[in-house]
Length: 372
Image: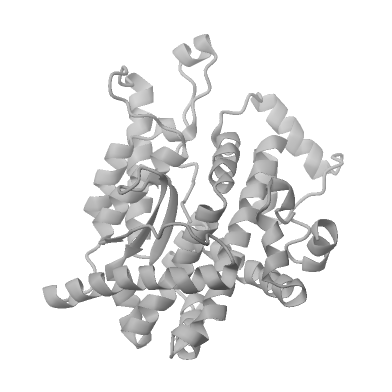
C-alpha cells in the first residue's frame, strides 16, 4: 500500500489568510528535494554480481505475472482483465517512484508555470522535503513490494503500478536462508493481491483520495476551539468514546471529520493487508513448495527484538501499527471466508458502506450480520 504522512506543518501566510485558500500538507513539501534527499541517504543494497541481479530482476518480473492467475482464481476478482506490467526497482528508483506517488496521492499539481513559493513558505517546503526524504531513505531499505494505485501505468496511462524492490528481497531471502525462487513468488502473491483488489474495484482509489483530502486539509478550528475540545474530552464531558494510546492522541488533535476519515483509512488498510495475507496462505501450499518454512521464518523476523533506535523509528512511522493491521485483518478475512465462503466475502468490495467498521474488524460475525 502507498504511504501518507503529515510530514510538515506550516503557519498560514498573510496571502493565504487573505484568499482563504486551504493548502494541503503535500503542497507544503518540496517533493523534488525529498526525492533527491532520499536518493542521497538511501543505503546500497546487498553485494551481488551483475549476473545475479539481472537474474533476480527477470525472475521477479516472471513471478509477478505468474502470481496473477492463482490470485484471481482464489479471490474471484479481476477475471478477464489484462495483466499489468510490474516495475522491478532498486532502492533509489523506489525513492523516486514513492515521491511521485505521494505527490499524486496528496493531490499536488506540477508547479510548472506557477509562482514558486518564497519566504517562509519556501523554507517550510524545503524543511518538509528534507524530512520526507529522510523517511523515504529509511523505507527504501525496508519495502519489499508496493502497489501504487495513484501513479499511471506507463503502458496504459491508467492509474496503478506494482513495484518490487529487488535488493531488499535479495537481502531478506539471504537473511532468512529460504529458497530464493519460492520467496520471490511468495512476496509477489501478496503484492499482486493488492493489484487485483484495486483493478477489480476502481472505486477504492477515489475512496482513498476522498479520505486523504479530509485528513490533509487545513483545519478551520482555532487554537481555542482545539484546546476546548481536548479539555472537554479529558474531563469526560464529551459524548464520544475516547480511544487509548496513540489513537487517542490523534482523536484529540484531529477534527471529528478528520478522525472519522482516519478510521476509515485504518479499516481499509487493515482489510487490504489482511486479505493479501489470507491469499498468500491460501495459494502458497499449491504454488510455493517451501511456503511453511518461509512463513515461519518471516513471521519470526517480523516480531524479532530490535535495537532501541529501530524501535523508535518504527513506532514514529507506524510500522508496528502496520504489523497489527496484517494480524487483525487476516483474522477477520479468515473467519468470514471460513464461515461464508469467498463469494460472500467479496460483498465487502461493493461500496464504502460494506467496509468493516472499527467495531467489526475484531468481531467478524458483527460484520456478517450487518452486511450479509
